[in-house]
Structure formats: structure tokens, C-alpha cells
Image (cartoon, rainbow, N blue to C red; front, side, top):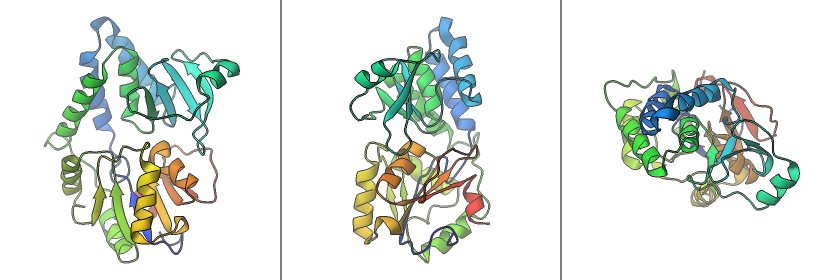
Length: 276
């Protein structure tokens, strides 16, 4: 990894989609959400979710969903400003309506304005569109997290990851920042055999709302400048864009690639690529 960036002091990792890349749990989450959708809309819910996974829907990774207006927002990946808006069916808003409706900076609150940064938020967005309450989505999420630590769910360990992380610890401070609850984090790390890797873990991080503040506090704590700090994650909105705005270096895990170039951005297929 030293080949990518030199002179780093602090490396900040995400958990879900970064330290493990399995996706079956998203489908399990969708199956639980389907039960909360009205019977007459369940087929539409699944059809929308499948279309999202195929990239054939207005909602997609890297966008945002406005549950109040039932609209899909395309964002500038570096400033997170709204550039285009679509209705659920994909029809476009005119730019005057876009500017008047989204003239202020977005506030991602996990209920009304949702950053669709990874696979968790695809079934969530479809469920909200089809009438599922925030409370019901959270219950389904916690049930999915419980499922992920049972014998029926097996996480795939990334080859060379543990060895690579241990080497990194000899050169820099490594910190885990995740939106997951502390108990879930510990169980997942134990499953991945990474439970003794991170001396500091920040759970319930509320990314992207708190990302910049958390990163700034960590840099201050460990005496690292933005140029000496790397954010590694699979979520453009949660971990990458805020870090770039702070002047940090970033490694974005995105198997499908991205049309974005930045001096402080490295795009990789997965962590295995870093530790070969």
C-alpha cells in the first residue's frame, strides 16, 4: 500500500463493504422489508430493487433519495451539491425546480434525505417509496444484523487482509469508523478474525452527517495532517467525498469503477488488490 501514498500517519477504515464485501445480506434485508410492504405493492417493491441492482433504475449507488418529495438526486461527487433530480419513474425535473427545491446544502438525516452510498440503501429506498415506515425499516435492519452473526450466514474473509492490516499497524495508526452499533462491530470483526486489529473503533458514526467532524477529531488526536491521512471505504458519500473535501487521501472500493478523477483518489476493486 506504500506504493499508492507515502508518508501517511493515520488510516481510517470503514467496515461494511470494505473489510468484507459479501452482498447476500442485502437480499436478506430486502426479503424482510417485503413483508412490511402492502401485499398489492410487493411485486413492484421487488421489481424496483432488482432494477436498482442492475443499474436500470433512477435510484443507484452514489445518489440520494428524498423520501419527502419521492425524488432521486444526482450529486456532484466532490461537493455533494444536487445537479439533477428525477422522479421515481426516471422522468427529469427541470433545472429551475431543482434549484428552487434544493438551493440549500443537503442534510442527510437517514429518514428524509438518504445517501444511497452502498447496498443497504437500495432496498431501503424501495421500501420507503412503497410505504414502509422508518421504524419498520430499522426493525428489519436489526434483524438482518442478527442474521449476519448466525451459522446460516458466512462472511468471506479477504485473502491477505489480516496480514496486510498487521503490517500497516507497524507504520501508522489504524482506526475503524462505522455506522454499525458496537456489539455488531465486535461480532463481525470476530467472524472475520480481525478482532484485535483496531486499537480504536468509532461505532454509530452517523456518516455522512458526522464524517468530517469525526475525521477532523481523529487527525487532531493522532497529530496527522490531511495529507498524512487516508480514508478507505466503499461509500462515496460517507467516506470518500468528505475526506477529499478535507484534503485527505482516499481509497475508494468500487468494483464497477467510477468516472471521477482526483489527485487524492485511488479506485480499487477491493482490499485484496491493496495487499497483493
